[in-house]
Image (cartoon, rainbow, N blue to C red):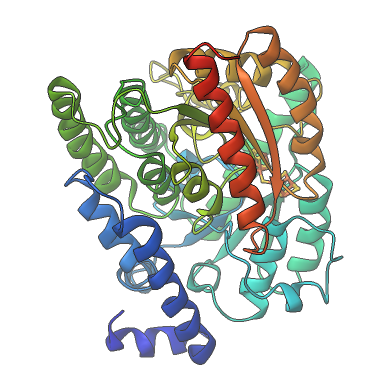
Length: 431
Ligand code: BJ8
């Protein structure tokens, strides 16, 4: 990354030496996992560029926007309504971290057996490595799992923190609570920015975010083709970048890529040969640069064709009703849309199980790998239920728990290869 960002990073309080080291490791990692792939769509060039400038150009845009009086909202969860952020002319970015960085520092303030996602965002902050956290005027957390809830109390000593209360059930009383939380967040944003959200601005913001989701839906649908027109790694990267990039520019680039993928499908050009075992991922979100499991799967003879995840369908599967005209109708529509997200923090959460089955069928997946970050109780527990429903449907299932470390990569590879063998055995009639 260019030398010209040094001053900007220093201004944000970034630990330059440690940051240089991190960027060097990431560059190598990206070359090995991404740029080494054969037959990638040309449209991926934009996303390669985004990654190469993830702490450069994009941060420059955020810093520039702040200088012009706009605010930056950092969020950890897909429950935080980006529509409201855009309606106050602020910018929302994702803060979840997907690398084993700063865990030693993190373990000074949270227990060792905390999930890697939580340790990573704390570690990035305490080690001075995340310009997104440093560029955020408000950091928005949510009461989903116990780990996050308690971590935000500690994290709030280091950043300007705001926590949204997420209900744990989907009864009408829970919906009422969630609607009141949407209203409270709206007021908080209005206070922060000094702007009052008008119906016109909210309508436009809903349209912008819906368009982003529609582009991601288009991409997801194209992956049902055989041969898969794009690797799972590339599609996951695009989903990860949906939390970082400008939403309008991102939407445009995803559509350009989708146009290319449609041509590939017509010409039967794939990222892998037709008939390659098709795996769907389900479970915990994979924040950038968490690419370990996708890399292992796609170097073990399979292709990933979809993600039932918050870096996947839980992020873009549902739209907000755009026919609403009044503020009250729009807030109701936002409440409804976000209540449909099936995070494992909800109980019961049978809608998620149905979603896994229908998504796996729509994508013609041969098997589902359930990904849980070690110590993530909600997803590790829900894996047992997911296994049962998929078995009942005759879909192969493998539950995988791992953290961000690389020590277990060979062990995971052996297990994933055995799973791919099972798929091959079934396809060829041996199972
Ligand atoms: S809506 S999945 S983004 S909470 S992995 S921190 S659950 S112990 S990330 Fe999530 Fe929102 Fe739910 Fe999605 Fe806790 Fe599990 Fe860690 Fe997790």
